Length: 468
Image (cartoon, rainbow, N blue to C red; front, side, top):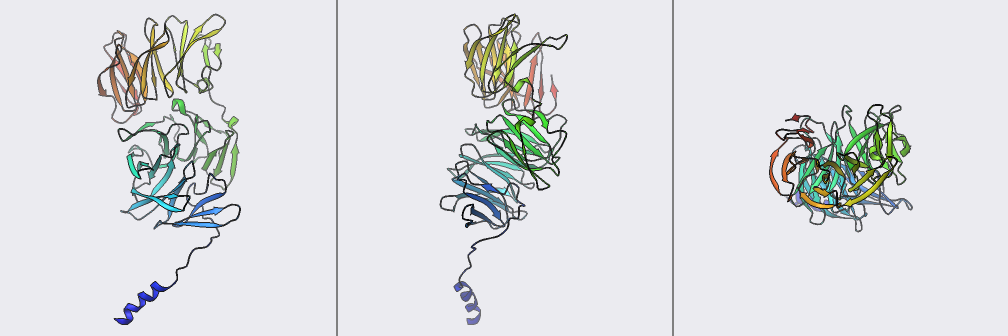
């Protein structure tokens, strides 16, 4: 017994070896090489550890805390925190560690996901950390950095979709972020008071891709998605619409594995064959008038251009309607402004600008007498405007991203649809909600219209169903 007990005591008394430096970089962790905002240190994973290396002195520091290999990492925008996630064994939970960069100590350990953390991203204000679980978890969770507690969570994709691989946060709105993967591309809105995140599927039509990386342009207007087929999906953010693929003729060999939008608008691209490319922003030229800030009118018989209103909105024209007398245009922009234009024989005159929406305007409807219009916005409001005095009459609030709106033919009711999959009835006079019904079980309500009598209305939704 004496001899047996002595062995552990000898081991405990031995001096422990401390890791002093390493040589090499495995590179198997997606997006695993990060430059700290101080521009002096780079950070990368090495097995279970994080390495902080000074680019000037080559001195290394190590963050030790994970009990298995690190699978992803991210750095807060202000450089105060580093967050890292790991893999573990089937049936066990995978840890996320938030590190305090100033003292190199763990700030919080967040444990909810199973088996693997696929990706991590801080929102634009660094108040929230968004985490994505791997294939065996399939969930997105939003964490409050101050309280170190989860705010809410949701499945990352539809059951019919493939794996979600990556996340990216909005540049301007702390409650918005994006996810993408195998046949899935989604815009998310965080609703903190109700502790929910609400997804909107971005429709890419017949284009089916596997997205492994994403980046947002410096102005926050475009989302670029790198695919395994070597092309880029570009989404115009104010309209939440897929618009184009580029470059189409020459795709990047072995797929796009990493990408970063530069301050001048160019895109830095890393590929599976080990090459780095710089793609100039002028490469993506297949955009149309809806996001170049112009309003264009065309003759219906010939298709020839009738006139163009230049610089109508500085963040793209996202909605347009023409009055019934064809004398005025009402337009909405990505910045949330509503503008009314007078159509003259040789010119177009700006009559009024109305600014109350805080996000892109997605739908405009004008009443029969051209005296008022209703506008729907991604800020969760619909506003009824007086088109004689150019002021607000009523505002409708809802915990959803409105996508469509319509007047009842008698104009005493208004119908709306949005990301909460509900169809809501509203009083046009006082803005009170009358009732709501479920318009879809799984998809956003993207459009609706009412017949001229008011007996029927039709909806289209992201689940690819048309309902009467």
